Length: 52
Image (cartoon, rainbow, N blue to C red; front, side, top):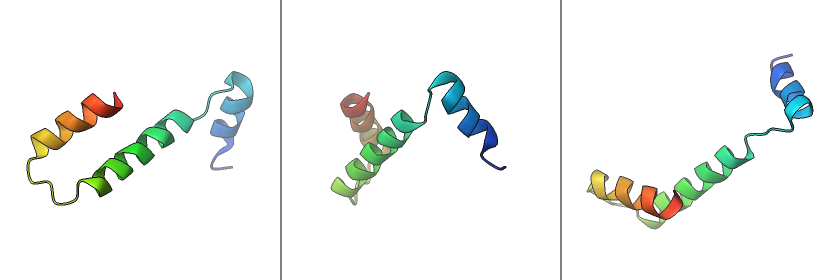
């Protein structure tokens, strides 16, 4: 019952959160590649230019 609305939303609109999950996976991969980054502004700049 907790996910009732989400399940019905898929069948009604054929919409999922797959794009959000994919973007999150890309962010995680990017973060693991650049461990130890100290400049947060540069990190966010790179993140938005590569995956936007």
